[in-house]
Image (cartoon, rainbow, N blue to C red; front, side):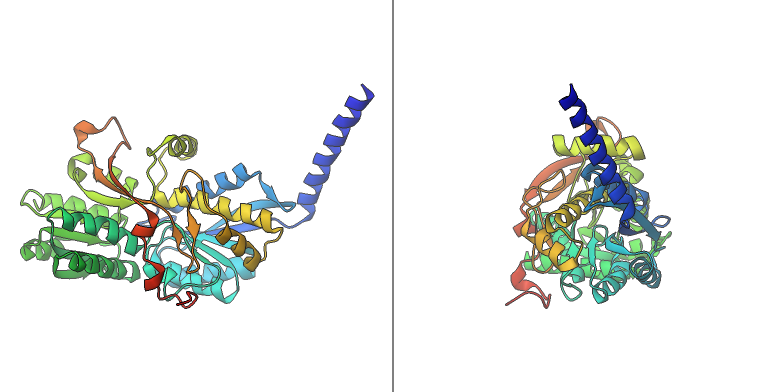
Length: 401
């Protein structure tokens, strides 16, 4: 009995000591720079904050004797504000790692701040290929998707099926421009033709003039090189114009399950799209989604699932490295394969690109869906080394040629 009592007391003292140690040390702060209130709020926003907190909790809540704390800022889709938030998080709040930074222009701005200060930044919501090319850095990770992979998976499948003439509706900023360029390259290399394009301001409510130009082009495919609310509005208004009934296909080059939910299957059915994650892929994705929905009442987007995975991978690397030093942690992150509900045998390359499988989906007909969020049919799984830009084509100065 004395031995049992002594053991219990020892455990109590150990727990108390660890708790006291965690209180004595400053918290390990991870900062999310998110779109909490604009057109990408459903894609990242509060869902990304929830995913990061879930990762911290699943890890155990502390690392190296420090309590893990998630802090967030709303960049309002303004690049200068994203840079200011990154600067404040690192310089004044003591943030060690920044995650998400939805939207490419904001990501490029925040990335420069993190790079200058030698801090790790992990991109989940933005897509511009520049983030792992010209704008790459030693502590930069592009985790979920990029314009090259989106174009490669969707564009190639479309041209192979005979949809070989394209016209683009492009959001006029870094992401849209890169997505149009990358998809155009895939279309032309595959034997197709680009008949033209038109650029629209971000957060556009009226697509009528742009859609009329696309309709007049007679292109078989109208490629939407935009995202979030812009994609939703373009698809809805395209249906009102009778574009699909007239024989033209609308292809969203970046769409999320939340976008399809907003559009509705009646309008979205038959759309081809590429995604890095879908909640109903397997038992692991369904289990994570069940827990996520208990908090948010919505399924996770690929960006939000990527936040969970990337934060967890970072924390595991901090523990293994025994430090929060960016160089030491990044070394472990690049050496350690990523195996979780988001990726199987994922790996971070020297250019910061996290390589993993991508998926080609077709949006279900209403008659095929069993209920809300049951939106996709899996057409193909594309291995990461085929989906993402090969290192031989990289423009990242860190890549040895």
